[in-house]
Length: 143
Image (cartoon, rainbow, N blue to C red):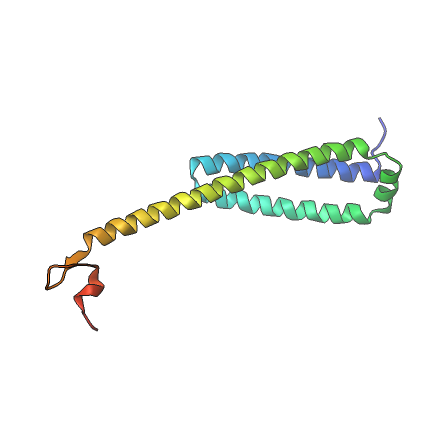
């Protein structure tokens, strides 16, 4: 069995990291659907660590003379295609997760608004002329 070239080793490592990222994004999606904020914090930390490792490896690859030569010779085409496909799937899943987060934020804002409106309805008072006025600020209490 032949030993992998340095370029092939780096690409295999990058493929592995991208596969790990895809798994983390899938787990993140499940966590978002289950509404588990504690687990979301943990998975986000793992994702950030992995993204830093991916970025470091990308920098290593971009400066590797062996990789640049092997790429020019077409020796990396298949591995790069697979990595690009993984990257595309990761981007798509990350975009979906981002949309779920945005929808969750909107739902929380709607709930907050509804709760505040209900609170204001119960805080309605009437002035001396029988007109409605809202909240404690209408009582003219001064500190």
